[in-house]
Image 1 (tube, rainbow, N blue to C red):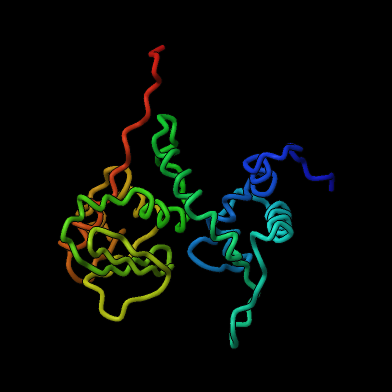
Image 2 (image 1 turned 90 degrees about the vertical axis):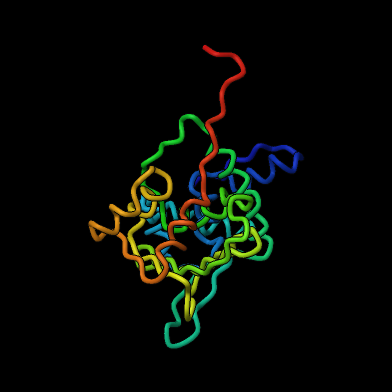
Length: 224
């Protein structure tokens, strides 16, 4: 393995890129922002990264103090990776990067996204003004992963886990979830075809799904 490349500058931004600028590194951070994961979970979230490359990035992020290894409590006792407190400081950076990238006219809409990518996108583009006085709790089950989403006081709270009595539960796969959210897919059609199931208030689900508008693509100052 060759020596890791460096910009060789005292600039803090350049140093940050030395730490997390290698390919796949920030996607590892993305996959850990909502909580720890096993190596197999990270592989599912970043399928285009080979196991060897993913292991290398994890090792580099550990050395940098961004990621640490841990273990789930018994009886699972599985080894996991999680962000350090300093590593979690990359959260606002990732949200800002996502918000900026969402304005790209070249954004490859319709391409696959990991479940965590969809959840972080919800947090990134949530329109609190449009939410108004909407107050609801939704259980989102996407590809078997459970998330708690709560809209209250014009803000979105989202984390892994389950609600005991949500206003509605949405069960679907990531492709259908993305199509309904970002590609103009019909909620009614997704339910009719069995690709998405709603248990509880359909009105709450419809209102919730309308709170995540994508920004208009940025335009160049000078037209070609």
